[in-house]
Length: 377
Ligand code: PMP
Image (tube, rainbow, N blue to C red; front, side, top):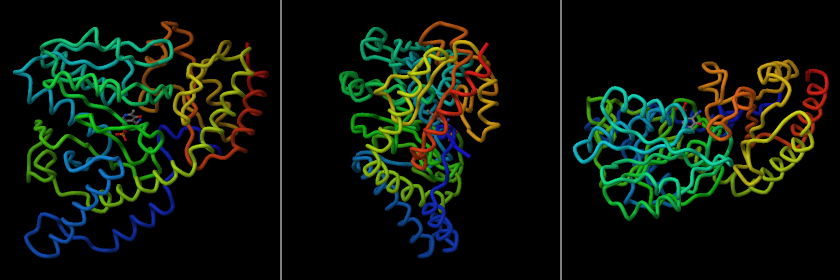
């Protein structure tokens, strides 16, 4: 089996699995308990938070709370800020190409709670530019949410530049979904107010992730209870998963340092191989986007037919993102870029993981060429 659907989820790293089992075997107690057993676990969690912040080059001016993943972190950040600061202003800015765990939150705030939302369009390279944002910032804007790397195209948004611009607006919070960036691309997060991610995109556990926020920010929780996680996320912590998150990130940062050139060369080999198939397909990703995601559209055949044919050959790829693929025939991301329905209905996403090898690319390109020649109209 060749997995080119790592943006949906990636293979659990063996060392991460072992670490998780070792925590499960420790019979860890409740970190809120008033005895030494609870306090020891509390201290372990505090250390894991600080170590993770350090890995992301952040210091104690940021705080990390553990969540069940990027979906929860995105909801907590966006709903939390919107609810808390709505008296200051009801204008929100996001993009038309966010993951549904961001866009559906904005749709809800707009439809049900009377917020006004501006959806920034990407350019033809899939990038949302600072110039585009500048046109829409208003006095009553309270939140800007822009993903770091697009999960369908791998387009890299200029989030450092945007963060630096937004520093001129102290009443606007800046949230960034880094689910497809963390461990894949080194970025500077210092000037960003809120960051969300999931562990399973970087060879970690499913149902695990975090929201990082600037420590002085207060936002509304999504649910109420025992006031764990700085009172923003009540409920007894999933301690073993939370502890292993730090290990997952340190592991993937090592992988990033050691494998940066290897992943880039796998990516470029795949990209160049696809370019040669221009009779059958057109690329939707830039060559200098993420080294982990390449998107293309078929010119003469249905994407679903190719996905199934590749799957029958043991090669797993995706149409749009896993969260949208079953619901809509069209990729709203590709449509937002090119306004071309056929191109948006027939896009394919290839997403690499650290466990992919050069041979996977060779086999894929050979199989793809054969299938395209056989199946094209
Ligand atoms: N944001 C982005 C950019 C993603 O790619 C994903 C996963 N597809 C998510 C958020 C949601 O992550 P999870 O399903 O782990 O909550």
